[in-house]
Length: 92
Ligand code: HEC
Image (cartoon, rainbow, N blue to C red; front, top):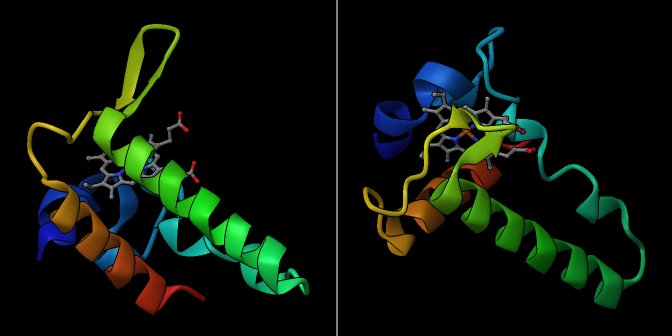
């Protein structure tokens, strides 16, 4: 519900991207599972978590243009992690 309220207009309902303005978030986590070394794989996942949290909290601004609004005043960290878990569960 949180995802569809806050994110779906740019990332697709239930994160199914049908040409919306934002990138396909179900493709974010494809690279880490392919890493054979467990320690490096874990580092990759932590790095992705960090990138996800920062992306959502700060939004995305390039050369002064807001491509994605910041959510840190709207969504507490627990809600952002719940959205992340939702996305991971649907990742393909
Ligand atoms: C107004 C449209 C809009 C809304 C609403 C929006 N996003 Fe985005 N989002 C974007 C765009 C556009 C980008 C790509 C921006 C860029 O890379 O410069 C992006 C990028 C991202 C990224 C980085 C993805 C990557 O692989 O680089 C994440 C993570 C993300 N959004 C998550 C979310 C979540 C979670 C929500 C809901 C809380 C959300 N977004 C709401 C437009 C939006």
